[in-house]
Length: 420
Image (cartoon, one colour):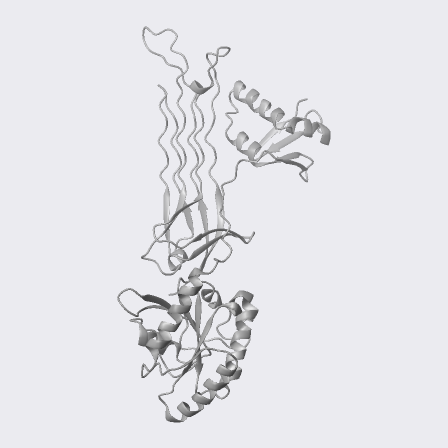
């Protein structure tokens, strides 16, 4: 089954907890702190695989989670790092953050890897908090929580040439004639229900990847017929072969209407180079009308080929023409680059709101992370957290907002009592 869109949840591993530990060994009266750090949580990594061509694997499994880091140990032992979850995806996959419609990755190269969800860092053990003034610290960090994201994956086929046309124009027959692809071919409209890819070999050094796009009709950009589902697969192609049915009632009207649908879906599609191929000239009565149609297109400045996909007439000249145009497009300035995703840098901004029950809630990535990494059972760890509140300006902001003694302050999953 051809699936070109999927929604999945990815979650990186939590960092392992650092530990409070002191060296206790016979004949070593002052062993000192030796609590080790926790291990880093595993990442969720997307890897482009040549063995995949659709997103169908994501219909059965929707959640991907990397392993948590292990807890640190005594004798300054660092916990083991959580294993990464490497998720194979097909080339041509776009990755969006669901709900924000924010494109964060465009993965096209075989073997390319992208860290989509970074694992939490391991918490520091008490050995990391020693100083000349505090040589026996009873403070450590819990591991940083992992991150979870809801993603939308969208596949756009990677093809040099897109074959477009109205239903039953002969697109699948053309693809089958010039490549080893074997799409379903029948005499009724909408035989092709999914895009098909094929590789045409012009000579030893020249290969073209062609995509047969299901038939488009008026209103396709609004979901009529097979709808706009497959229009996006044309967006990556460099050149379009616009296949015209020479035996249609009004081929010129079909040509005009289909170009309108392309432009309504994406303005840039109307700017792509098109080479017109008038098909079915092997039928005698169509041959004569096709030559008249050829002149009409030429008068409009269009490049036209008279072909028969079934009889394989004039297919080589057509392919060489689209190859030449494709090379020219490759030399032209590239389309705007896809935004490159950068992991958040733990911004220190925050905001304070009131919950319905009157409690104060502090919202901010850095402070919520600090709260999650605090050992609340150790007084030194609590004092360290209070210093973080003061450093980030949250303490003063709560005072300015009107926080009173004994008020409840919530930070992440933690609930504190305000004491000025």
